[in-house]
Image 1 (tube, rainbow, N blue to C red):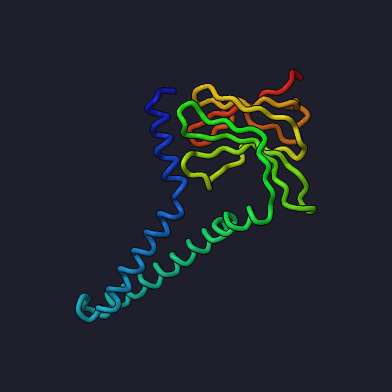
Image 2: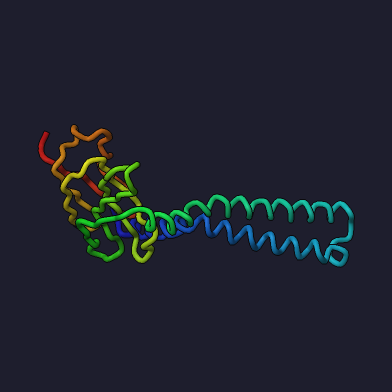
Length: 185
């Protein structure tokens, strides 16, 4: 792919990553602005119909802001609660040649109820809190990571046929293509 396409993907990735926060800020600004108009409605709005519309807009903006915060809250709580309840062991890490992405093979143990699982996590640096699982195993295979440009190669000891849900080929996440390579079938 041309470098311009990768640059566009990197730019859009940051917007996508913070879309909920940006929408929340937009709703907060709209809410604050419309309630300011409601408070000063006698001075700013002449007709009773327009005053009713302004009050209705303020209520809609307030409800929208509350809904966006309610959707963002579980992910924010997950950032705090998961490290406290789950033990994560990292086996392998690799940083992309351009330094923008970090891939890691990690084992997550959240107690007796969940069991062990091994994951390949991909993070856009410097957004360390946004690690995304791009490959997931219920068992504990040996996995090694290597980069070639924007291509992440995941070498494992399992064949694709032995997996319950084989990964797509290639895996596309943000501005990265990832491929799983195991023993020949």
